[in-house]
Image 1 (spheres, rainbow, N blue to C red):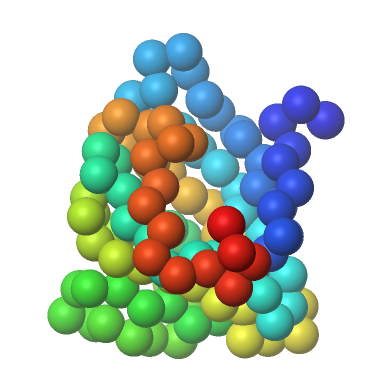
Image 2 (image 1 turned 90 degrees about the horizontal axis):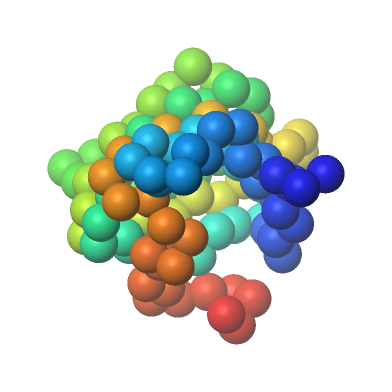
Amino acid sequence: MENYVSKPWGHYVDIYRPDDKKVVFKKIVVDPGEQLSMQFHTKRTEFWYVTSGKGFVATDSPKSSLYVMEGDYIVIKPLERHMVQNTGEEPLEIFEMQTGVCEEDDIVRLSDKYGR
């Protein structure tokens, strides 16, 4: 499947990625016990909606560390450090909408357990 992208922490599926890349929709699936890197983006805002599973999110926002589960949402602004970890026994699924300049190379990793 062309829009399926495997990652060391799980995978994501591009749901909508137009040529102008001003708005992108993805489904992110984090495997049990895995996590995305602590990172930030310079050109985009991300809106996360948890569709299933449970996890832990750390950000720079006033709610700097919180546990999330189905139905929770988070807004991540440009330059805001963030990470998510699956703390459950089932996959953590997040529907992500990106707005701004939505390019895959707009990731600055601060720490990454996979050495990327």
